[in-house]
Length: 193
Image (cartoon, rainbow, N blue to C red; front, side):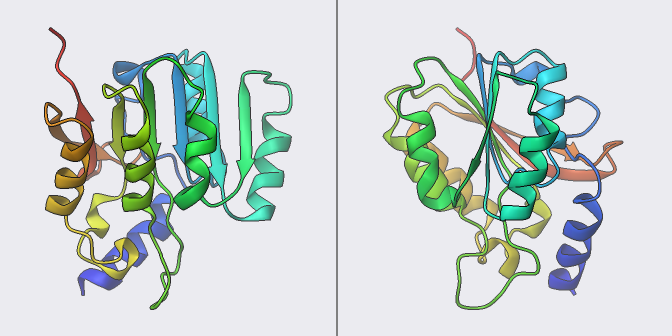
């Protein structure tokens, strides 16, 4: 039943932006880097909320073309056609300020025997970056422990992020357009000193 609910939830949420009513503004850094562009709603929101440079990686060609067309007049937006499980590093390796990551790449519908959700590979690439104080937001936590997340648990994700910096603190946030999906976004950030 949880697998069915997760698949249905992904389908419904993909029709809308799903950062919640709070948006990205409270997580603002110079750079915004997203995995899983889809229609580009998170890119649009990041621009509206004042991120100076925005990067988004999308696997599917038709979605890349659509997003490039949508943001063709924004010189501070870069849409990359690639697989975030190995393309993220090429985007972030030369970025010299803290990044806000919106990790939202997954394949729908999920399939057995492939990587449906590249979160572990994305976090490994973030771990290689010399800056260890990025803000990491992971969407669709309702898919934890299901095929859509390759059976990764919330505990698995937290442990992986702690490999980047043990000082990360975690918060669960509501998702959906009107915060209707409780505890659906994991926020990891380093407390201000």
